[in-house]
Length: 192
Image (cartoon, rainbow, N blue to C red; front, side):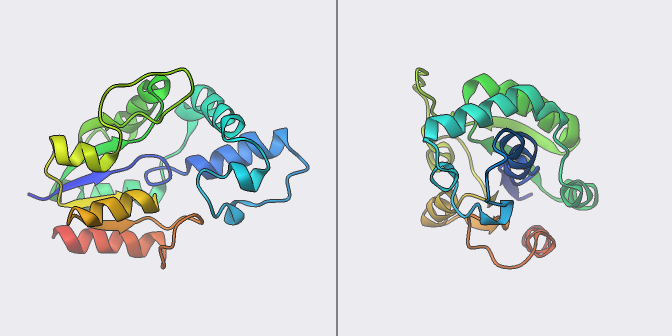
């Protein structure tokens, strides 16, 4: 059985879009940017703030609203149809103080299919971490993976350098062409 490594944020859910719409825009009504204009991740320069200000806002949203995030309906449908065709592991880059929220969310919505939940801590000021520093380092150290499903172009590139097959979920900050449905079809074709 093939092993698929899934990202969480902006793959299984729409964290950036929901944060932007529900937290950033109401707090910054002068913001002229729309979600499709978020062509960089992290988007702090596009928003005209420091990276620390952006992360503070995103982390506050994680702490207060992550539980209410809805999974992408297309992902739930895909898992209900094909989830039994592969082994599924989550490896997500999240701050350590929000990992519990992410894990609870994943198992509440996708627990029928997800076999493990792992983090590569997303660095924050004042927090030390002495484990693996990237998803590619995680794979080299701990796991055999056949396919990576991800939105981050750097992670996609590093996985391809390791010889691992990838599917990129289209987001404004990556160069994935096509639709979410086409990406999900590609995943299905790679595991069946």
